[in-house]
Image (tube, rainbow, N blue to C red; front, top):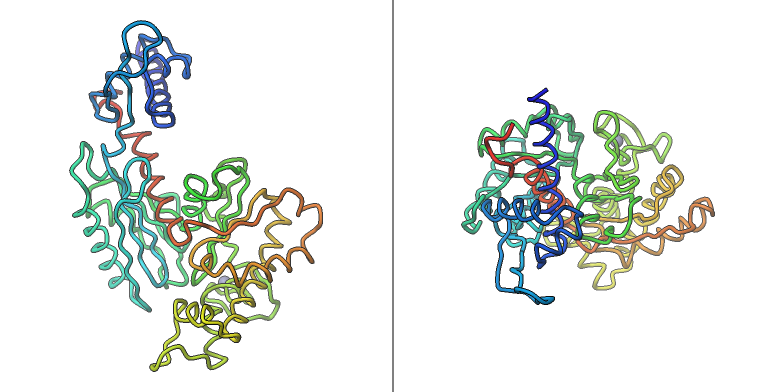
Length: 398
Ligand SMILES: [Zn+2]
């Protein structure tokens, strides 16, 4: 019984301490008395938990605040630079790495582009991106608190990448590899789930609890936030909607299916259609998303039409998703978000004409403002949340 009681006390204390820290993070700068009134904890408890948090360097206190009569109170601040997080969006043709403080502010970033590389070559670039961010991380109490990677594929609960068809990866335990190399906590997450989390924490999804985040890069992934929480499915494999069939007897996909949505509505579709139409953007006839974007920006009608076609096909798939989940908000994210001006109208037209009328009530379609950064910032935020949950408790606790 004694052990159980000690354990219970420890759990209560841990929860109270998290509550105090969360309150300070949310409302900083704040006095101890205000923390007590917001949390409902008594002043003595708050005082002792605040002392621990000060010792752990997660908060600072500074100069006296406004007095309501007696001695002027010391004001508490969240120490957002007590540690740093690394978030990586591992794309099919790029790696974007960000270094954030504990509030999730992006303070350093690096992007590397590539095409058709093997696992060995991509992992080298991944390591060098992580090293780059490590080297630029300011000195702090906790240093780098962990590494998060958003990947374009299905991830098991153990962080094993089971299948990333557009990278041609199968059964790679990236979590174990990175943990061994860096000796830090590592989180591997599907990039669409990470992007949905990034939008909910920092982007256009802040005020919504039922969100469908559609990440359109070379492929399409969908992150679902239902009733305020990410929905991962039974084994963590939800959101593979890029592979829902939208054309019977359609094009053959690398996943083994035919007529998959991402073959018609993603960057790979845009590039393929441009090639088929003989659109050239450089003397060596190489076509990229950026070069097509520039052509459209300069008013090239054929290229604008290609973007509009992507918007139309996006509408077809999004229509199916809306009818399934009845969300409050659909966010179009990743690189395609930058082409909003061309894809928005055809997408909306498709939905107005085809989505069940009652589904369109109270529904908002938004384009990501974080654009290419949603997944990297989202997975960096997951790392920070895990750090606060697990790693900041006294080492000698049960
Ligand atoms: Zn497929």
